[in-house]
Amino acid sequence: MTVDLRSDTVTRPSAAMRSAMAEAEVGDDVYGEDPTVNALESRVAAMLGHDAGLFTPTGSLANLLGVRTLVEPGDEILADSLAHILRAELGGHAVLGGVTTRTWVSPDGTFRAADPLRMMVPDGGDYQVSTAAVAVENTHNFSGGRIADLAELERLRAGTSAAGVFVHLDGARLANAHVATGIGMDTYGRLADSVSLCLSKGLGAPVGSVLVGSHPRIAHARVLRKRYGAGMRQAGILAAAGLWALDNNVARLADDHKRAAELASALAAVRPEIVDPAAVQTNIIVLDLSTLEIDAATFAGQAAERGVLLSVLSPVTARLVTHLDVDDAGAERAAEVLSGLLRK
Ligand SMILES: *Cc1c(COP(=O)(O)O)cnc(C)c1O
Image (cartoon, protein in one colour):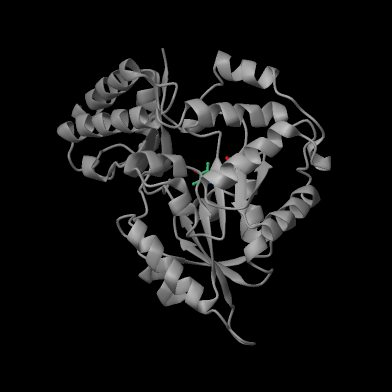
């Protein structure tokens, strides 16, 4: 049996989720007539402390629409240098939204409000680019599933509001932050003007994200979604999977976190320099392989030959992600295989 730790996107819908999809009541969502989509949108909006929601096929699109409602073409959004919106959305914000960006660097992956607050230029006049928004990612994917500290997010909100700058929260894995900290998703959500949440990551739905915000913002995003060609019709079949995931797969994220922590500890016991278990807060482990004799791709290749799949983030870093389809036995097997390779 292969243990696939490349990403929490690899999960497959369970039989129960599939039957919820099969039984979904549907209508034409471009006409606003799909009751299941409408139910999902209002449920996620309330869950994240906002008035309205919009179902999208991907998290990238939810981010693109959210950011585009906050930032006019030519203005900028500030983001962490490892932000998913800048590193893994193929330049969509620039190509399709005309949005420009500047980045700050978080040396150990920890979010500090002072970084964007120091960089903001809310009114650049006719010489400098104006800062329209700041993006935060919670949890932070490429920093190893780091949780942004609530006090720092509050500091960001206070500073940006005073300057008339918006906040976008890429909450692809906000449910992981919520389960790990016990802080409500609405508490996090209210500190941003637009928030995206992925249903297709650890929550286990096959497809879908939801963008939330105020009624006018979401109405604007709805127009943009159709313009980009993503107005879907009987999408309730997909939204039903999201509703099922919210009912059944949120609390269990704690199991993924526990397995990631155990896996990180097992690897650190062999090679303490490759991972600090204390830094593994949710379901993602980033390994620093710079002290190995082999590069990350070779390491991943050797692991794959032994049935454990991981992703290569750079020549010296690899990522392991625990999820719904990896049980205790799978996590233990991964720990055994990877420790064996690291011991060599
Ligand atoms: C996965 C992910 C997204 C969205 O990705 P899609 O593949 O487009 O659904 C957005 N932000 C973060 C942090 C992610 O990990």
